Image (tube, rainbow, N blue to C red; front, side):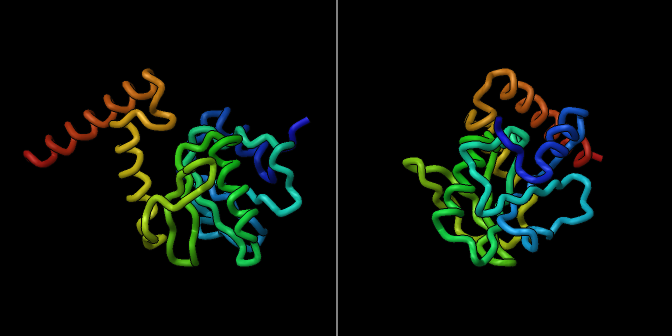
Length: 171
């Protein structure tokens, strides 16, 4: 039977009960990835070196934006395995990776290997960067937005948001 990562079942149950999450932090050790502690829209799981990805249930990540926070001791091979699992097994919408304590990069899979799709950006710009990428993904039908129903609902939401901005600007 597939095993949940620590807190994975709780995250799954929260989402099943319609709990809204804006970000999932995936740490590779207990001390890292605590930037957003106390934020109710951010959840955290820990994937240690002994956690076997191929025997795991990461479906609690489906459609979420994920920030992988590696411990300095995490090997490149293990980090690649964690990032790949977030995409392939977890079906994450976007995966970002912390490159040091103050910067992150958006990751993509290229020939089955994770590579940085952006130059490093400050951690403080994560929310804005995620939103910009979500909009680009909606408009190009990438990732979770490839499904026509998701795409159509998302584009309607974008137009509603634009309409609100235009109305506010006219006041």
